[in-house]
Image (cartoon, helix red, strand yellow):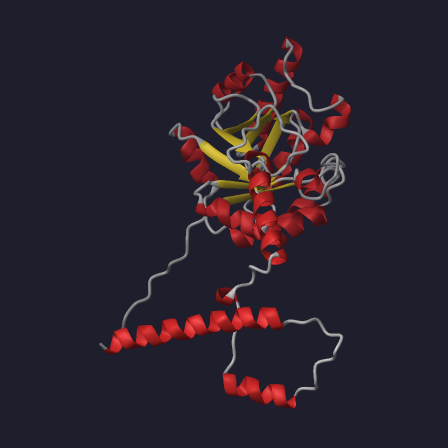
Length: 324
């Protein structure tokens, strides 16, 4: 009897991420919000996918992340987990899902983990959410922290502004990082803080730091899928690099498609299906007559007939070569 070997792909764990940090191996994270995007990211070999509440802006068209709900995150999280077989998937806890206390956070985090199949959750804040992080991790729910510019607090900050630029602010951000580490967070996102401050934090905590607008000295980097691929053109954050002008590439392809349809170049014989000629003749005898006001499709029929004849000729030629 032949034994069958499992071909299941091992998913990246939070322990694997810690090993990467300890070996000074840069960690790459990017957002994804649906099945095809998650598949592409996974195939590219990135170890972490964040189902970010940034989907509110880049997918749902809101002005901020605040309107995003737990149901939104679960809906998109499910799709991403189905698409990613290897990457660790972390799902954002949206605004209002944990600010009201650790009990609400526990209920919502449990829902997210159970219903999406994600590997962890992420929430914003430092000292003020340390108890919540501790409660979640004690219950077996891995938590990624997020400090510096926390988009859910954008109204309190007065916009998307650099954080930690004064000594007092910097000390507070460092305290946030230490509080998250002590509470059990397995990683910490540092967003829009000075490079030097991010470096100091990375040197002072033992868990991975993931930077976004925090310079090159973090344990890893995270970017928004639509920013780095040039798909979101409403604005470009200073910290983002467009690795491809994706929106223009897609527009060009859509224009090409429209023009191909309008000039009747698409679909061609290669994209069309045919039936047996005898069956077609029988159907034509049985079908009701074509109304006089119907569109004249004789030109299209001639084009398809020419294409069909070309296919027949190619087939006959191939058969002849095979027989020889």
